[in-house]
Length: 222
Image (cartoon, rainbow, N blue to C red; front, side, top):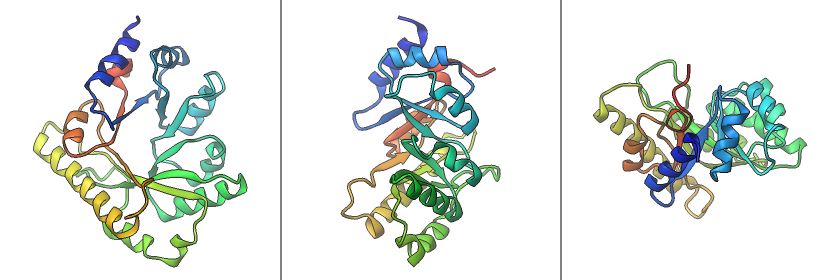
């Protein structure tokens, strides 16, 4: 078996049951994605809409595509017909746009609310106060074509494991708060998407149910 396939199998052996693996294929060629696919991987994450669209039709139709990067509202309609999960809903405006475009396609699109948990200002996401205000609103309750399935966040890029752990712990706390307040009897609200190649073991320790891993599968990006 090729190295990519071996990496997939090794990772899946390490992940606890109940933790899903998203293979982050951004910047990687179709040939690399096929190697991962042939090793049994079916969930792939892309950051950029243009790159996702360029790859999608060259690959098997049973791939579950996740949009994991910052999504501009004017790009939503390009992916709304096929995307399985949008991890990066970071504003009410974006969520409403997804809802409107999904409604036109008679789809209900699964989404995660992205929270800003890192110290870096460059990362996107809600604060918990913004999310609660949105979800308490009548306008939010009228959205019918989006399904909120959980939360996503990215920790600070640092060697300080205690900081990373505390940021992931905050995100898991936000998940529990939203679950209790808005989704208590909704089994579809079940995703905590946190953890990448450098920090996924810490994320799993803090309750992650979905990890987004690229370089440990495909090798370091150039």
